[in-house]
Image (cartoon, rainbow, N blue to C red; front, side, top):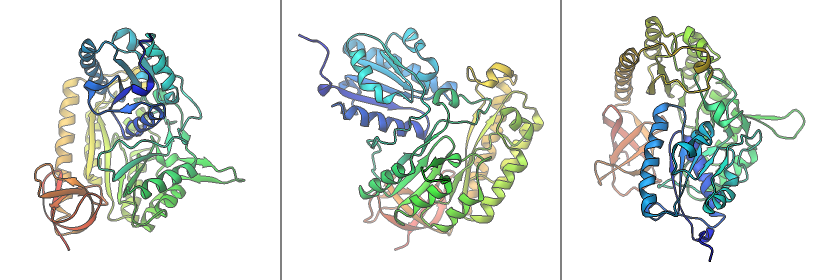
Length: 450
């Protein structure tokens, strides 16, 4: 009798780490495997297959995965037939090394090989190791309808492109996700329309660099750029909120900003990673813009979209960063007055230009001190941003019950700020108007305007 379990009886458990793109990719993976009879489970102990979708953007992201593999090893002791797979960016970066270093891993699958997962799982189930880390110049998974894994069924990520051409000197993304490929705009519109029909109230268009989206439509001299795509998505229904991420400062155009200003359902929030406030460091990072260019884009946002919230990414301790460069980052933050920021110490990633040609010459002690100064400043700016909202009335999309009280709900306003307010008779998915009465560092607190 064949000991390899039938696909029809296989239970799949999937964990996702990293960015929004990984969340969207996990939904593609689940769709591919459900079509082959796999059953999704949220109980890791009843799983026949465990897949961990990984991130390589920073070292600590990979360390978390190594720790999870040790946990899976303990589960396998109780369930020897368990199949364990590593997929995504870490799989692409380390390839067969994952199998060699951790004997628990049965298959390794890169971001462009998810269609091959059923075959690879069959190979792994027969006792052989399975690897596919071939990057594609065409794959966008445009024809695959993702299985939504979100709990509230209100907000969804829609991938509009894959890969990146920017080659920032510190970044591993082009090496693990390949070059840019834009998805057929018609397939994007179909996916968004289907989500709205299913009751979703918000979509976020995602890509490594959404501003460089460009689809050759097949018509003579006609290319659909991001501003046009954004407008077409907004027109699907005025009751559907539209967000997007991530923008690149060198590609952020006034055209996109004017489209945002035209449609009330396009949210007033832009995530515009600065990384550094120093032109000297930006040049070393190969970011493709100067401090002055970045501030020009900020000026355009504030001119065209005066109610727009701006968030960013800040990296400290990059190669050669002098105290003057660090101070320029602090002054940039003070000038822009970010509403929110993701802040990190530089972590050298193997095979990047920086790892091959630049020296990671800033001590951990200096990196930690500079990061603390950046975080302290951003906390101050975030608090100021929240206080400026006191007395204002916002439309809020209800996302669920507050963690602190069953009598309160939470949601986000157009500016992507979390708002907490009394529950009354409202439920997840409702739009409500809330007047802001108080705030914490992270949250706006309000009362309902009936």
